[in-house]
Image 1 (tube, helix red, strand yellow):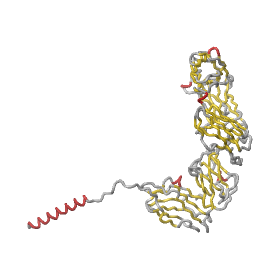
Image 2 (cartoon, helix red, strand yellow):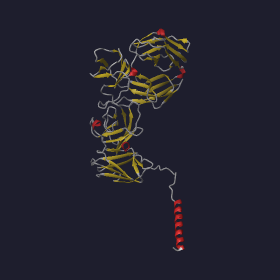
Image 3 (tube, helix red, strand yellow):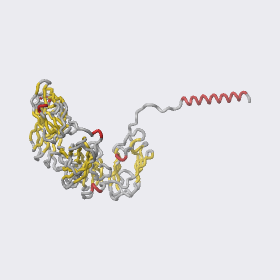
Image 4 (cartoon, one colour):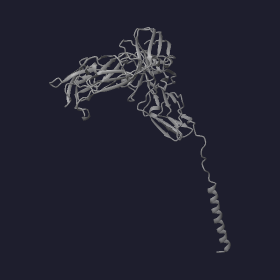
Length: 539
């Protein structure tokens, strides 16, 4: 081959290699960093268009400006009225297609609330509050019902509570039928059911445990209004949720406490609860009921060495059979009496000292009990306990403020119902100063009834102190330790000194509860006075 051709081929090869290297060096690299995409998808077109009338098609197709996804569809997406069978939702790229499996109802306005279900594919930015409305009739309904849902006993709200409208007038509706229209509450308990007709409607709220849009479980919460509502009424509907009291009586739990005792917990308080052994011999030594009337503690004459059977009976001819098994090894053996402080280790000056025993008390020998103040000064006292079934002892000492106390129970000071005696027990406690406490005086106006419960509750709605009051007036709560608290009033309409829940079939609404508008800060050696003018709600 001629030399000039060889040189020419070498030149072409070298220039090709150089160009390839330069091309590699100049290749485009995606920029790093940059501003994060925080823009949600935008709807470009929907077929058929929003507010379509005389709809008789099988599908709706939404096209967005970017790739999308559906997030948490079962919780976010709401179609009202309910469509059965449920339509399918298919996402392909920038398109969302909703396909209906069955012809829709005639002359009906449908609303598809997407919530935050539609989001872009990469950053999951949601298209918040997106909704689509169409009608199978000649017009789109434009009326609405709005309001708020709270739990009746504490006035707290919850997101996702169902609010349902029914067009028929039938008491069995929430049990057997899906609603005509529905929506869900937001974080503040507010709701708005839009694009509905004039009505009237029966309205309910439901905390739906099994997601079937029906009130069919004992642990579900419900709210209702006795008065039908109409679309377009500007007055908000306020619904108060409650859980109905169990209609049936049953044993919720039974368990052995030790080798000689077992407890029976009922599902609700009962007025009468009798227990009798099904064996020939009566082996019950004593029984002790709780103050709430829902728990029975049974102490036996002999230890539980085998399976035992009992008959339980209560009001309305209720009976049941209870089986108690032999206790686990850790609970077998000899009983030991122990004594502890029931009251706090910091008590109010002058208050009694409360003790709790593991076994009910038969007697107390005061000569073997010693109470000292500041480790040196013996303090006079008296002893009280309720009866032979009680596990509580009261030391009445007239304790002095700002002192440390030592309570000693020598061996044999306490004898229980089995003849067991305590070992040496030493308990220490302290009395605060009077100035460690504050008070709150509440002047109440606006009440029209005669039975109310006025309560001071903590931030978790646990009762700190309460008074049963007959109406308007000034009420003083003393001996209050520093804390944040709220003031609550229960309209005790039935006079049973506790909050009474509602019952749907009986058309019984829960008792009304009111909270003072502000949270109070109780301070030591500080008195708070508030004036509370209550605007009572009629129901």
